[in-house]
Image 1 (tube, rainbow, N blue to C red):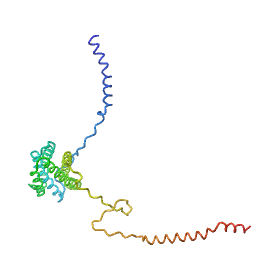
Image 2 (image 1 turned 45 degrees about the vertical axis):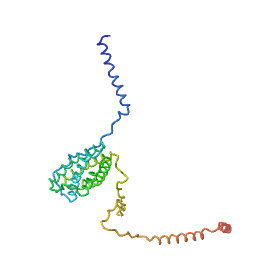
Image 3 (image 1 turned 30 degrees about the vertical axis):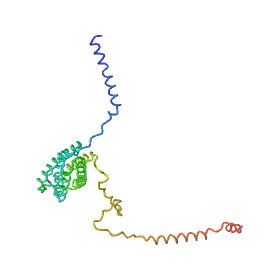
Image 4 (image 1 turned 180 degrees about the vertical axis):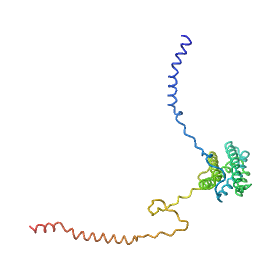
Length: 272
């Protein structure tokens, strides 16, 4: 058989081989559709012109973002020197590098909105850094994870509040980006397996909202002041007493009307 004939025969087998290979791939578990990645918010859709009123809470938020970078960047640098765990070193380096980016964002926003930012950590944060300087190895690892996880747990709900309430577009965009950073940091810290979840503060119990009697069926708005106890329009003891009387009367009347069946038969026979 010539080389041309062999090539021709192989070319006829090629479609069949492709179909068989495709079928094998589709039957493999690993060929199942991959789970879609976590979507990233479209940050480009939020304007950053500085338009909108800047509330006191917006300024406080910018200060908190700045303070976070002022102590978490040096904490991450200390992780490179005082930890013996390569995982902790990488977590510290990643968080510190990301805070450098976030810190530039908040400084740019503050410059645009003329918000005064601090230039050094607050007293609590300085105390946490002091703890880390006095620790090494596994002791440092635990202090580092505990302090950063607790701090991120506090700032996380504050970011959500600002993101959903601010009137200023620059603060809104900063809050959205900060939310992405903090969520990443929480995940990195928890990947260390050193987080003691049992020691974290528990969420407050949900508030019981009374049902509105206005006919709308929705929850009534909670009053800002102390509410007086609602007076009951119905006297329950009085209703109970009336029910007892009604039942007694019904029983007495029933006995009077429903006489003995034998007496009823005698009366019936006497008519004929």
